Picture 1 (cartoon, rainbow, N blue to C red):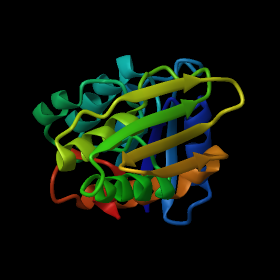
Picture 2 (cartoon, rainbow, N blue to C red):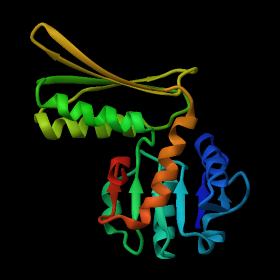
Picture 3 (cartoon, rainbow, N blue to C red):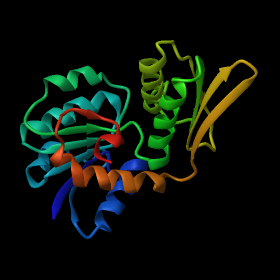
Length: 217
C-alpha cells in the first residue's frame, strides 16, 4: 500500500486525484493539504510515501523541497515554475508531468517523429479561462521535443476560453501538404490513470528529476 498526500486537494485536478487515489486498491490517501482547508503540507508529509502536487507555480517548488526533505517522492502536475531548480533537490524522486493524459503523451511522441520529416511546425494550445500559465506546460514540452529533432523554433499560440478543458494541435507544413496532430481532453477524468501510474512508479525511477509521463510508461 502506497500512502499519498495531495497538495491543492480542493482544486479541480486535486479533488479528482483524491477521488482516484481513494478508489485504488493499492493506494491510501493519508491527507489533503490546501489553504481552503487550513491544512499545510508540513502537517501531513510524515505520513506519506508520495506527494501529488496540483497547486500553483509559486507553491510547487517549495512543496517539492518539503517532500524531498522528508524522503517523500513527488508527482507534480503543476507547471509554470523553473524546472532547472529541481536538479538541486535530493532525498527523493521527482516526476513532473505537464500532462497526465496517455493520448497527450502519444501526441508529443508522434510530433517528435514528424519533426524529422517536416521542417516547419507551429503549436496551438487551447485551455479553460482559469488556467494560469501561458503557454501550457504541454505545449512548451512539445516544442522542446520538436526543436531537439528539427533544430528550428516552434511558435506557440495560446487560447483561453470558457468551455474548454485542454486541447492541443501541432501543425506541420511542407511543400503542398500539412499534417495536423491533435489531442483533446474532454473531461479531467482522462488524467487520472496517468496520475495513478505515476504514483505507483515514481519510487522506482532510475533518474530524478524526470520530466514527462513517458518516463514511467
